[in-house]
Length: 554
Image (cartoon, rainbow, N blue to C red):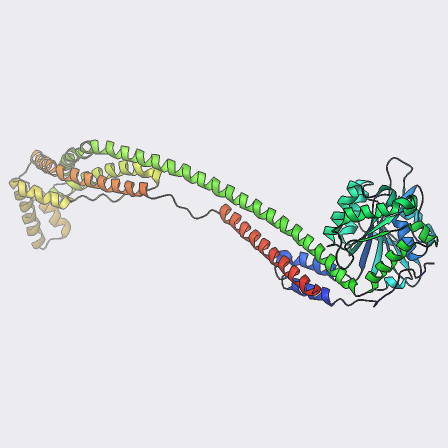
């Protein structure tokens, strides 16, 4: 049964007000959804009631024996050819208890065991070339009636560092959750390069909450002990802090102390640790280590968010570059299309007469067809010009539309200054015979209309009695002469129309291709903005934690 070896020098159950004040700052950032999980994790760890003293060291430095000496009894199993293979947590209980936590992959299962059976659940087998930990054992929990642990402190024994990668990983996981670390060094193999690296890692991670114990001092001749202690002070100088020590270094032989032999170094370590565990410094130690852990988690989150931001920015830049490249290709294609449209218009200018001159033959042919089809042709002379004018219009506009089609530009409307009605008026002014024929037709239609006959009979009588004084050939000639007289005006109208189209192309050439951001760009931009917000909020959270820690430690 363990004795009360750890000295109780202060209050049991330290006030957690400082830690609570820190978590209040967290809650002001928990309203940001991406940080809710992190804030909950930080608050849960910062307010954790259990405070952990983690004993760390390379294989076979006597960590378990040192804990046994503190407990005053050989609670943890120790063997010459065996070593600790799983984390062992020693906390307060009214009587000695032991619990094994098994990991089944899908969850954990706790089972009480007899304390004298602990070796089978804790120790590695070192007789083989590869140390094998006990199968499917997550951790072992031991309860002991040691008053100094009533304040919520737990002593954690860990597998030796650098034994196997898996065991080292488990030990590093325990260090992450430590409030105070005891780095156990072997006097006969003091401070290798790996141990020095571990000392600095622990110091940085726990903000100096590290005690250094040089164990197995009995393996070193007495005349060399002062030299060993001085070397430790030289190598470890600058580590620790004002709460734990700058640095706190103790040299002892835990095995001899456990056996009851007087060991001043162990007694000094025991008193010092008891003061830290049960005194007023306990909460400040917890604040330091937990703020350090929180800042480490926040830094990891910040690094991940910054990486995500950089990736999102790179993605957005790539999407924007792709779209800009597509726009450049579109601009080149558009410039080429504009050049080709200008060339098509130049060809069209050279072909204007060929497009307009058929108007004369079309008008003459329409006149012949009109005379042959309708004796009442004097009232329908506009037919001679309306169709041919539309034919010219359609030929020109079709060519222009074809030139502009690759640019998706709408061609302006082609207007002719001459209408079919004006052409007829011009033709009547130039032909006396045509005027007489038209006048005679109107006389006969007037007589028929005033006779009181029906419209059908009136129209039949008019057509039977009326005989135009102008022959078909004369009408064809008059129409042709009029059409030829109108040709220069039609050509001028077409040229003006092509000038307007040229201006349209010039405006298109001076206008850049503009598009609203695509869905891909908008999505990438939204991701960047969200990542920037997350990075900013994490930085705010980090500043808030640091400020709260300064206030808590003031």
